[in-house]
Length: 158
Ligand code: ADP
Image (cartoon, rainbow, N blue to C red; front, side):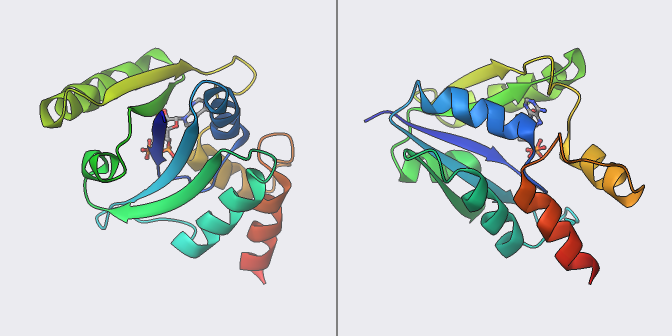
């Protein structure tokens, strides 16, 4: 069984993430979306909220699930016998960071392959931080994120 991990912050999940998940779910037997917890980082949504938004957004995909992990993603990947780690590439500036990350991951375990998906142009400008900014600025983000994300923003504002 070819298991792939898709790690990230997903703060919140966007249509950009979802597009990659949908494409990857056709290639791998199972995808685990992994909320990677970094205690140094400040997040907008709690882990519980992020899990809820992801679960609701992937309901239509029967080989995709979500989990969270505090520690190195590669160690989680080894624990579940993953074949690959998925990452998305949007713009050239993503490459530098992803290259360093991929090199470090290869150092940890060369048997787990990094697989990169090029973002489709319609969603390539979307990042979670930009979504947070647009929402804070009262911009309509309904075309950029799943509906549940908008519901959760509204709930948080109450
Ligand atoms: P991280 O903090 O690890 O970058 P993110 O949740 O921001 O976590 O992103 C997780 C992965 O998804 C990264 O590989 C990132 O490049 C990719 N990604 C984020 N937004 C998009 C998008 N709009 N299109 C394609 N890939 C994306």
